Structures are given as structure tokens and as C-alpha cells.
Image (cartoon, rainbow, N blue to C red; front, side, top):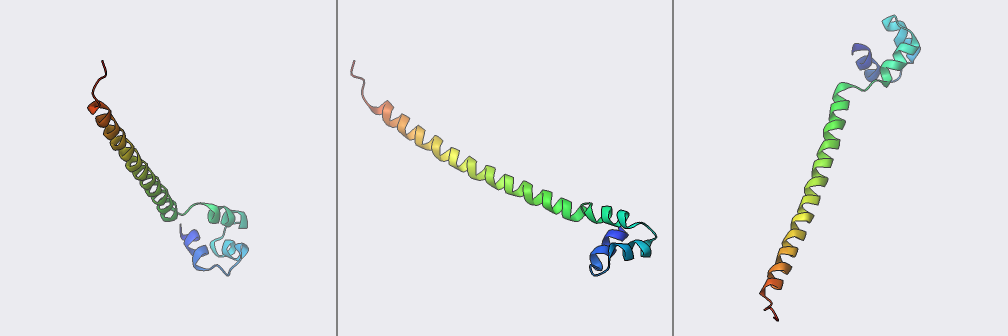
Length: 84
């Protein structure tokens, strides 16, 4: 976590320099920089789920309007006297 924060706080340094600073290889720095940062990861998940919830709420509204329209048509149909 410290390495990741250091990489983000110092974008001007190379991976080799960061590796030397922490005593790890450049590859380790590369792998760490590719790992999702927990806050970013959770923020993205929250964003995606909120969008999905909003899409579902919109779809539910459309379905409710369709149901109301069908009920209206049904009530008008039921008011027509039988021809028997």
C-alpha cells in the first residue's frame, strides 16, 4: 500500500527508481501499479451498481406505465355490453 501511494504521489519517477527506493524489483513496482487500489475499486463498483439500480428503476417505471395502460384498456373492454 505504501508503494502504491508513493507511485501515485510521485508520477515523475521511474519504476526502477521506485524499486530502488523500496528495495524491490522494477517488475514488483509494475505489478503493484497495476493492482486496483481498494478505494478506486470500491468506488467503481458503487458507481456501476448505482447505474444498474437507476436503469432497473427506469425499466420498472416503464413497466408500471404499461400495466396501467393495459388495465385501462381492459376496463374499457369490460364496459362494452355483450352482444349475446
